[in-house]
Length: 493
Image (cartoon, rainbow, N blue to C red; front, side, top):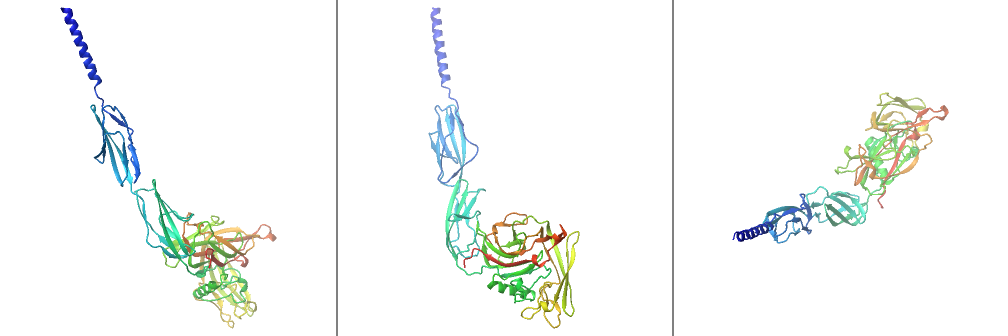
């Protein structure tokens, strides 16, 4: 009997153990979710993204997807989000089973589409700048890139475009805007009206010659023709007006800028377009290959008709950065004029601004008979700028209205040996794309309205008769700068 009870007890014990083991196998473990980035995913409208996180303990799981707290889908461990509107979206996955609930959230940002808009009509006259300022809306980003083009030619890489064309016609502008993964292309036609202009920068705004031996301040034309009508000894403003009138009809009419520091400022009757990949100006000047002038340009951005000081930029040439004195200055002062029975003597002094002050006096000695022009007037050749003998009888020399008896010329100085580098009239091709500011940084100009030409090379020559002695040739007539035409190379008329 006892054995029977023991057998029954053992059987019951086995049943209990088996039941306990079965319950242990049925114990549910809470699910886990992984593979969810903490960083936001950027989408554009129209994009689709399937969210498929890694899930463990999947037995008996239920799935719920919420978009910004609102249940959107259920029953699946994956969810495909379709971007139909811009905004920020928190996509939450909740996974539950008998062991518990786990959830993770995805952050999605759907960016606004790029939208470009422009004025209904774009019209401008040729050789005028039209500032085109499109309105662009889109995602809040800092990596926007822009590209303007006409056909295959890229004409700008900023949002706003300073458009200019040297030719009339109708053109199709294309603006390409890129931000993030988005790229939008916008097209608009622009009508360019035909106009008539003069190719030469004929208007003389300022004439600031630097004198020397046989300097001829009144020349408007060829310096060799001082006898034959190319001298115009006038009051300063009258001289500017006369030079302007002559250069308008005769582009070759030159001005005699003289020794170091002499300059003149010219104005076009239109804006010269800065055409990419091409030279824009042709400057005709009397100088040597190694004595080329410095050229400065200005774009009349504020449209006041005059070059403002902060609008000037230098065009880099082979001499850029070669100046040994960046801020050189020479002061010229008229002294006196004397006569005797046969001659006239004119004196002026000069000095510079260097610590070891250089100075000197220049004397012009002319006979009366050899100084008369073909028209019977007394030539101003060799006189201080503005000095003239208006009365052949009295031989009295006077400084004409608007000219000064003392003035300075300032600028950079490139000291150079010009032995063997003969001067001649030559054509210099100039590219506006070479414009730089005072720091030497490139400046992108749509075009230019003003040109300033200045002599910056201070010439020395080796005197072969005395061995290696270098002689100052700055104020010698043969080394003085003359400037003729300054032409817009893009105008066809």
